[in-house]
Each structure stands twice: as structure tokens, then as C-alpha cells.
Amino acid sequence: MRPVAVVFALVLAAAGVAAAQAPPRASDVWAFRRPIAVPTLAQPGFVELAIDGDVYREATASLQDLRVREPGGADVAYVVRRHERRAAEATRDARLHDLVTTSERAVRFVLDAGSGRILHNRVRLAIADEAKNFRVPVRVETADEGGRWQVAREAGFIYRVEGDTRAADTSVSYPTSTARRLRLTVGPADGQPLPVTGARLVIATAAERREEAVTATLVAREEDTARRTTRLVLDLGGRRPVDRVELDVSDRNFHRVVLIEAGDDRTQWRWLGSCSISAVDTGRLRERLTGTRFPETTARYIRVSIENLDDRPLGITAVRLFAVPRTLVFTAVPTHRYVLEYGNPSAAMPRYDLARTVAYLGDDRLPAATLGPIERVPAAARRTSAWIASQPVLMWATMAMAMLALAGLLWRMSRGVRYTQEGS
Image (cartoon, rainbow, N blue to C red):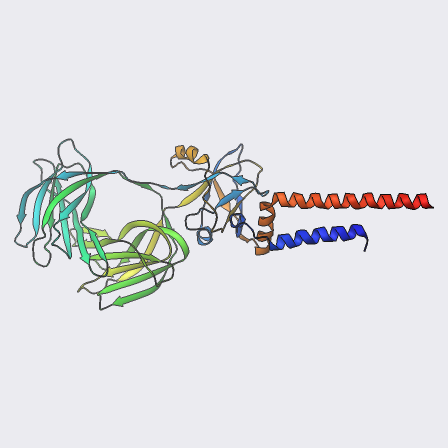
């Protein structure tokens, strides 16, 4: 083998060994790539890309590993947009007037919302601590001063339960009203009047919310006769955020407490919250509330437990989950191509100036971009590209060493040729 070839082989072999032994930076390793189809634009402008179930399944729960990139690798600033404007809420104390106990052992009282036609849509009751376990109906009526009582909510329901888990909700909602007076009738607990000690009126503005149905499969239904509970387990097929559940119930009249939990393996469950579901259908009055919001969670499984007590299990025909959709907003340039990369648990959440600008868009709809097919980046390609990208100094140093070695050999060979010519 000639000297030049030997040197080149040694240099390339050394570089290859170094590349094989050097670990890639975790922050440069993304497992999935998808092309982004951008709508036709006359000039650079904002576009919006919907995050689908495939992205939720493989990305981190916080979506911190999402990256919008041009094919050459340059990052493009983006903002994750959550399509919900939360309701503002304020409370005010309300004195209990005309407090009486009815012949049915229910507690009835009147609240004064005050003058000025104040908006209100919920009342939160304070119940004495000695009432440990109760589930009681609440009827809400409203009236203007001097006017007749009108039913605002017939099938309200408050509860406090202590057992394997503790759950409580002592508030009742009703359609937003400006009536000055409210009359509440609170049913008895185990035949005794419930010790109501106070009340607060809640004034809340309406929330603005888009939501999408989340595909989930009912994979288990268990009737726990010992605990008198129906348990339903829903499989989302992968980790993704949800925050509302809706039950389809065939029964016409019922009041039940529902406990909601989340998990990733169907063995360990974390508490999300509780709610009440109810229905009244008397012919004269029809009222149903069979769904609830809970703190948003990212999980594979949702478990819904319905406490039946001495009633027969409800006829549950379907359980549906919902979530607030998220989109990526970024500035697209005509003729430029973009990809979405994700699948890197070690990636840090990026921070871009664009977040301040997008905040001024409100809930305006933007031109929609779409995701193409999933490309799984091979592990070997991820390791090589990640390491080379993370070692620019060593890469250039190796090239410089090769060039110096080549120059030295050429110089020595030229001297050898000259000496041969002079000798001849």
C-alpha cells in the first residue's frame, strides 16, 4: 500500500472509531419526523398546525420536544396555542334569611344577592364539619324583589363522602341570573336536616372553549358489590390530554357521585376529582347533568367510578372524553418547506419571542397547515447525525490533521523525486 493511502486509511479509521465511541447528545436526538403541508400564501404569515393523536402518543406529555424545522435543520419559532379562555370568578358572602326546617326535614332559606342586578350562576354552601357523609338534592329558585319564585335548578346535588377516597362538592350551579333573591331547599341527610352554616354567591363569566372528542375504548366494566360501585375503564390508546367526561345514561331519574382517576398501566391510579350526575324527568320538568370537567391530565387510561349505594347500577350506554385542542402557530414563508420533529424525552422546552405576538391574536382562526405521514428516524442515523452536529470542533480538527498529514507526505515525496533525479 502506498504511503498516501495508508495515511488516509488511518485518518478515516480514527475518525470512525471516535464517532462510534462518542455518545450522542440526548438533546439532539429526535425519533419522529413528519412533513408539514403549508397552505398557499402570498407573503409570509401565521399558519396553524393541529396536533393529532399520533403526536400526542410519541411526544412528551408537556409537548416540550416539539420542533418545527426547515429541511436543512434550522429551527423555526412556534407557539403551542390552547383554544380556551378560562372563566373569571368572584364570590361574595350572602346571609341566610328565613331559615326553616320543613316537615320533610329539609332546610330552606333565602339569599339576598343585593341591588344593582348582579350576575350570579352558582351558590357554594358551607356545611358544618360534623356532617361527614351526605348526598342530598338541592332545589334553587329565583325571584326579583316582590316577584314570584321561579325554579332555576330542580336537580342540584351536593355531597361529602369519606371512605377509600374523600370527595366533596357543596356548590350548585344554575343558569346565569340577575334576580335579587334566591331560595334554596336542601334535602335531609339520613333523615336529619343538613347543618348549613353559610353561603357564598359565585359570579362567573362564561368561558370560551373549543373542544374535540378524544377517541377512547371502554376496556373494562366492573360492578363492585362490596363497595356498591360501578367502575368503567377507558383506554385512549396512548398518553394524551383530556379534561371532560360525558356519560350516556338510559335512566330517567337518578343522583349519583362520580369519582375520576387517571393511570398509565391500569394498576396505579391518581386522583383527578369528583362530580355529581343527576337527572329529573317528571313530565312537568326535565333536567339532566351527566358530564363534568376535571383538571386536565395526560394519561393512557381514565377510570370512572359511580357510587350506587343501595340503588341498582345505572344503564351506562357510552362514556365519552373531550379535550381542548392544541395547535402550533408559526410564521411560514412561501416556497419554504417545513417538518415537525418530536420524540425526545430529554429535550428542553424552547422559548421564543413569538409567544408575545401570538397572544394578541386572541382566538382568531388562521390558515391551516397539515401533517404528512410519519417518518421514524433510524436509531443509527440519529446517533451519527446527532454526534456530528454536536462535535463541530473535533470534526474540523480531524480534517485539518488529514490535510497536514497529506501535505507532509507530498513534500517528502517531492524531495525523494528530486534526489532521484539529481542522482541519475
